[in-house]
Length: 79
Image 1 (cartoon, rainbow, N blue to C red):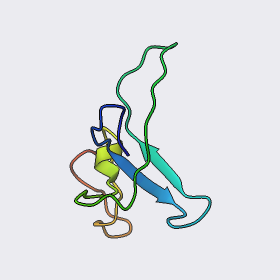
Image 2 (tube, one colour):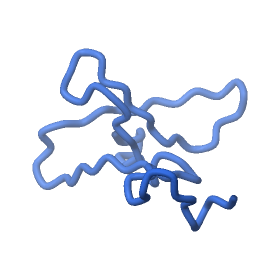
Image 3 (cartoon, rainbow, N blue to C red):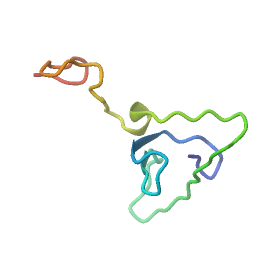
Image 4 (cartoon, helix red, strand yellow):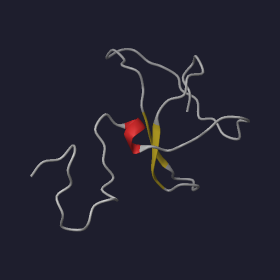
């Protein structure tokens, strides 16, 4: 995903990768209540690197994949 200036935007593919109902969260610049912007989904772009990243899409993010069931994760989270 890129903005109108061609700058890459952070994104995270939440569900349905490769299907007609893929759910993607994209980080946008701050916009006023009445402002609009245009973004572009790009694919098969030579030389581009595409990495879905939870941390790039959200200011505070944790997928909890590296924690044992029942444990209290550290870092962003407290008990």
